[in-house]
Length: 489
Ligand SMILES: Nc1ncnc2c1ncn2[C@@H]1O[C@H](COP(=O)(O)OP(=O)(O)OP(=O)(O)O)[C@@H](O)[C@H]1O
Ligand SMILES: [Mg+2]
Image (cartoon, rainbow, N blue to C red; front, side, top):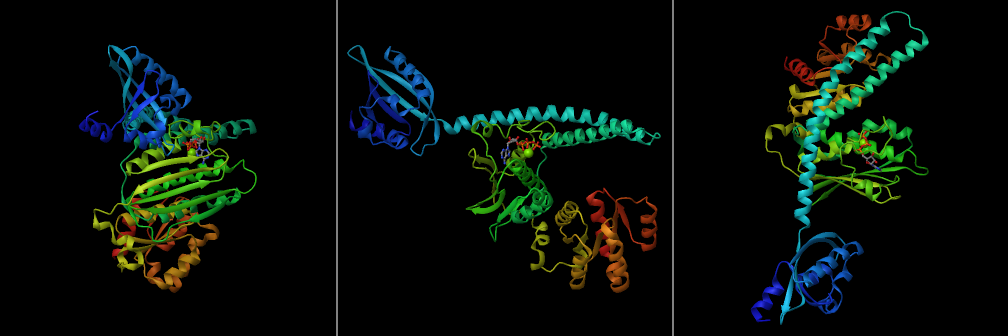
């Protein structure tokens, strides 16, 4: 080989090697040496199939035989690199002809792992988009008949005295139509794949808030939660509702995985900064996931749970959300060793500064007109409203009981107070009465929310209080507008 050819051979970006007519290496370039993790000296003289897994040896043998019969061959093989990672190589093998006889083969191997994985991901995406369209059409069509079924069941219920059997039947219709409606709404969520509505988000906080939503179930299931949240985690520019939805899916999966487990049940919630990325993990010590299941967990409708318990959409939806955030959702598991789900997100900085001050919390002086207090015993409600207000550039403290509210009201002036009337023991009413007596300024800034505007006691109370009120469920924008208006006066 001339020196120039020698350099070409050594420095080529592809793996190049030659074998003799029996298939043993006669020369190997540097890339091959590095990829396989064997010294050139150790490779020369060994059989080219000996480095491959048995199922790949057959492909290579066929390729070799074809080449020896004088034809150029091409094939794809999978192999393990020096770090034991599985890779895909595309091999072209050309006969070496000397004195009119094939004496060996010249092979060029190109690592096509990235291209193949990308193509696979693209195929998955197309599949998801097609399924999404179909599902959204079907789900919309189902909504109307479902609403009809539920309405008529309600009519039946009120139609007159029912015997026990009839009442059971009506209850079952109601329950099952509710279950179907829930499935339909998660199908729509899956199909909609809406663009994220971003604001600056503290992922530690989203972790905390998500856990708060499941605290009750987690403690009744006797699961221990270990929090490993990185202090000073940078904020990122993301949709907090969507991220919460992802974390909630992961958390519920972890709870479900631990249900049959004997002995200690642990869920670990972890956040870490890794360079310019944030990784949030949900880890359980449940049964783990077999390799076969692991390869399918992100597929829509893939579930190993009983009918009625899982629809197989949780991870498919979560995967889509994380991807829309420019991130990756990963699953690792070993059977018997629990499961780890990782949300890996880029740290993004807000492009629009107008949404910033609200998130600075106490570090920045918030004018009273933009500082609100939410008092509601429903954590989800508090959180939704709080996040919504923040998005509009306001700041909101949120508490679940009147004593916490009184403590805050004593230290701060709020522009408006959102007060839930349906707290246990008429707590909402007593808090208001207390304010009327001792803090009339704040009392004059209350906006009530109530589940039953029509009930006579609630009507009487609201009439007497003379404060604005809104019926639950409400549009967040309506409540935000009411609070802002109240704060402006
Ligand atoms: N933490 C986990 N441990 C073991 N298996 C898991 C875990 N998380 C997910 N899986 C497996 O992945 C499958 C798909 O999960 P996914 O959340 O998409 O659907 P699901 O939980 O079955 O139903 P849905 O979330 O729609 O109610 C599950 O059925 C289960 O087999
Ligand atoms: Mg799930």
